[in-house]
Image 1 (cartoon, rainbow, N blue to C red):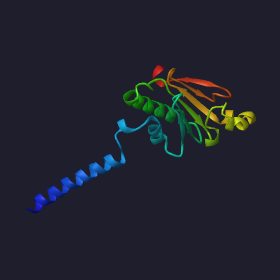
Image 2 (cartoon, rainbow, N blue to C red):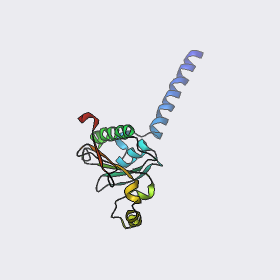
Image 3 (cartoon, one colour):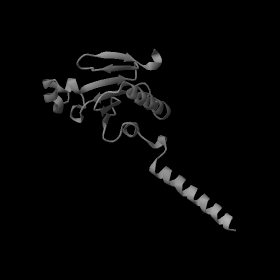
Image 4 (cartoon, rainbow, N blue to C red):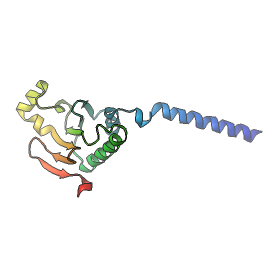
Length: 150
C-alpha cells in the first residue's frame, strides 16, 4: 500500500511539474516573432521590432559573428514553422547601444547621425532575403554570406 501511495504521489508531482512548465513556457506556436527574438537575445538586448518592415533591432556590446549566425538560424527556423509570411522577408539590425537602435531618418536619431555616432554604433545587419550579414553597414561594409551558402 505504501508503494502505491508513493507511486500515485509521484504521478501527481509529474503532472504538476508538467503543468508548471506549460504555464511558464508557452508553446512556441503562441509566441510572436518579437517575443521569440527577445527570448533568444535576452530582454536587455532586445530593443524593438518594426512589424511593417519585419526588422528586429537588438544591441550587443561587441559583435560575435558565430553567435549572430546561430541567432539568425534559430530565428529563421522559428519563422519558417510559425510565421511563413515572414520567412526570408525579415531583417536584423545590431547596434552597440540602445540609443542608436533605429532608422537613420528617425528625427530622434538625427543628432547621432550627424555626429557619426549612429554609423559607428551600427555593428551589423542581416537580410534574410539575401542571406547576407553585413558588418559595419554604415561605415565600411563587409559582406559575409550565410555559412550554408559557402
